[in-house]
Length: 188
Ligand SMILES: CC(C)(COP(=O)(O)OP(=O)(O)OC[C@H]1O[C@@H](n2cnc3c(N)ncnc32)[C@H](O)[C@@H]1OP(=O)(O)O)[C@@H](O)C(=O)NCCC(=O)NCCS
Image (cartoon, rainbow, N blue to C red; front, side, top):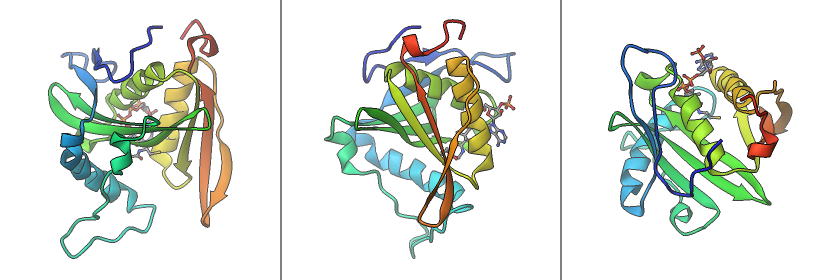
């Protein structure tokens, strides 16, 4: 298993889905100049989340959730844009607290879903940041629960069951695992 240096771009061949063509999946560190691009993608993400979580549009028709400026100043925060065949296809926000990596936000644009792209992105991010990881998912977000369970177990080579917890009256699930090569099954 190779470990990518922080902030490097990576190209992956198309992992699943339409095998009749190959696509380039790139996970690229987002620059401060790209904050408006990330903010636009976060609007789409917020729209998906408004299905499970009460979010209201502002009078301008936007949810108005901007990425935290801290992502470009705090060394424990890592923002990424995702491109598929040079087209924007999602984003990932990673944070580190108390020696644990946290998949803070993770999004694949609808038109690119169910092709293995989310899995390829997650695996790349876990290889870039080896160590203990936590992924929190709302219980109501059934598709994400299925996705993480499968993506993590494929990565580690072991089945994983999340731990339930409650926060602000909502039910959540917590996945915890180790992404270091020694913590990953050699057969994976
Ligand atoms: C969850 C999400 C990242 C999945 O991305 P994706 O690129 O579609 O994921 P993949 O194609 O790699 O899916 C791999 C597997 O996960 C599971 N999965 C993914 N989406 C699923 C869905 N909607 N319903 C059930 N299982 C699903 C399936 O087992 C799938 O394999 P299959 O397509 O062969 O059945 C994407 O749907 C998304 O961005 N959702 C909105 C934001 C979100 O919920 N983010 C996670 C926050 S915790």
